[in-house]
Length: 399
Image (tube, rainbow, N blue to C red; front, side, top):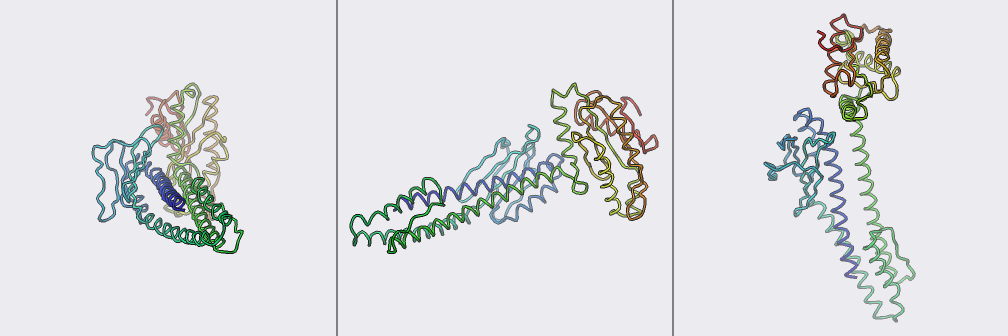
């Protein structure tokens, strides 16, 4: 019985610590995913705000974000806690988890396209977990004490064959300890002390099973939230189009794939004309509805393999992969200009907007994602200078 008790308590503690570490790893992974764009763009204010949201967890003692130079980018410390020294410590390229007394320390790297952009350090207090474990141990000790006392009384009164139910119960406890299977139950074959102990033991297993299910559900919910946050990080909230981060990721994939160097692709940088006038005279609600309408019209004109993104404000980008010839992309740009010139009516008023588009080709104009964006942007401003509401193709050396 003592062996069974020891196995179960040891199992509970190791399992609880493992679940706590897994939940903390999911939390720090979500945090690393959320602050990665902020580190890349140097937005420490947004990073500190994100840390303040995570810092609402009572068990969180310290959290810090470092950039690719291993310099402290943002941190949050609970009162009366001395944070670890991070100076001159290299970045962690792989997740790292360690327990120190009643503290759980985690390091989690932040990667972007095989480039280590920084890491996140988190220190959590597991005192609450210890208190929970002690309560469970007391409950286990109480139930097992009842089981042992009942067994002793039974052994003193019955013959050797009466030990069979007790031996079966002990074997079940060992099986639970070895298999970590809390769904097992003991069969109640007699309505005496052994039967009572068996019921109590089954009650214990039911509680452990319920706790295990609740913990698994919590982990699944956190994983689902993590997936949702990941989707939000790459999606524009207004138009539901991919955002600038999604475009940068796609462009880096395109330019880093050696198999695509001989395939022609086209990047269109799109900017609405007179959009500020719409916001100033018709309101931001009308401006938002105009952006949504523009996004829908363009989306209907492109292929499923193409990527239409909203970069922010009234700026869009359209990446056409595997273009057969430049004339095909230019014809599409001409059709987009005509389509956007069709009246956009919001609240019974026509929005006086146009559209300017700049085209740049990969790999003929640029072979890197940043240069390709700059070329398309320069071509778009060339269309603006030419009178707006038209498209221009990037020409090296053009003013």
